[in-house]
Image: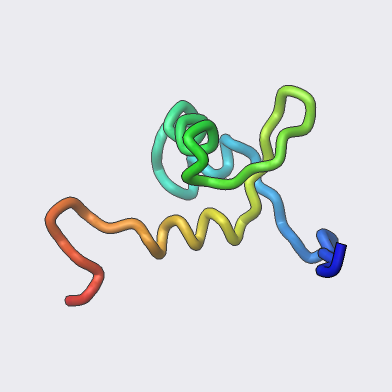
Length: 70
């Protein structure tokens, strides 16, 4: 592997924590994970989402009918 990744600097959030940050239900977060819209790592039956993935998702999100160029 050419690119070595250092996961000691990555902060992982639980599905519940992501739901709280985004103010959505846990089921919505699970749907985003399963659809591939939000990357996550699975540990057994639990998922962990990198905090940077949540901030990236929210930056790219927009309200229907509105663009991010105001």
